[in-house]
Image (cartoon, rainbow, N blue to C red):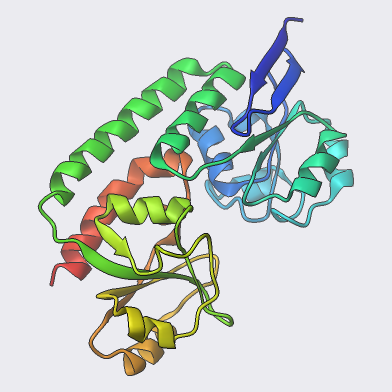
Length: 268
């Protein structure tokens, strides 16, 4: 069998015997991407958070979450490759998984990083035509959205991902890049990653809108009302966190969502 040698997004070298046929995916957005590349039958293991498409949780072996995994279950699946992400899966976990099978680690901070990952999967799983077609479709959607958003005003926003403690998305995150594509100025762009903040800082930074992500914390209408009582002059709404944080094939649907978000909620 012909050796398959390639690098992941951390420039780690992976050596495999041919094209991987048994895949364990430990990142929900990457699992969805595999399905949209026509690789559903090759997926043998997923996390409990791999909810798209929904039939996977019924048809595939669930091996835990993204950080707490059942290594024995993964080993029993005899995977040819395990797919991880630098942010979602710890370095120690990647090392442990490496004793079971080659581990491919993604590292996505930008739109271009996301497209590169699709291309890498195309090469890794011998679905180059499908990955190239997907990339072209996503680029078309992004270009159409760029034309639309160019005429929209820039808005200063705070993007919340957690409560107790309050946490926001700051710079050096994929979410921040999606905010930029939407012509949103990140109120916490001078911070890095996902800092904990005090609500008093919102008043100091005076965002025009507060965006409450639907994940990982499940913000509800009660949280919207509570914040409106504190910041009555600020637009506060819940946004679909998957469109702001899931890279991969989810991007194909993201730009229509972003356009409607502007038109229906923020340009009023």
